[in-house]
Length: 99
Length: 208
Image (cartoon, rainbow over all chains, first blue to last red; front, top):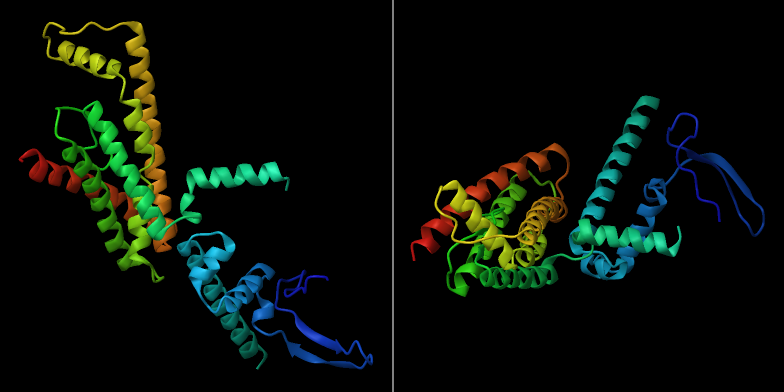
């Protein structure tokens, strides 16, 4: 499956969803929908978050799973937290500009 | 990426940043064993690790003296890095990771201890000392001795650089500190730990 693009290739702004389609009956919905926060993260980060949830939020378990040390996994999580905060901030600033 | 490239990348990571894969209690066990074995090997050639980055051939001492030197060097650096970690790290970190990774980072000094084993080093050092003090040389040296000594000194220099690089990586990974703040606090820690370890070894061990 193709990787979902989240940023504009021309100006690097956040992309929104314009249309959604039901694969069953081909009903198409058009509008302006914001991508959920997790979907806006890079694929690697998204995969990490999913694995982290599956490991019941245990960094020790994640470290075992990925074959990495505990601080390396914790640092990776800290980076993702920072990225989420930044994405949230950018999203809020974008909304304020529109208003 | 081919399997060979992936394996060589992993080997490079293990050599220059093993803390990506091992930290905490495991690193502590391996590191502690390395520090004690280095002290033991050092005792065979009277090689003292009498300061964070110091390696000197000196007086014969009981085995515990050599072991204690290594432990003091490691603890001085670790305590300082934990303090700096608490002051400047924005992440929460585990003390066991700092202690363990700093112990493991000292593994190049195991190679140094081995490089200092040949008697040729002692003979060349005694010869140099007699020349400096202008006393009659008590030992004679041959070209092979000079070659072994030169090799040991180059190895010592390389291992010291490697160990410092590993200590920095250990600090950066275990406390999650990057950039200028990491470099500056690390350099300050090295200077302070060097002074502190020298002081403690001289004050507590040499006076015993």
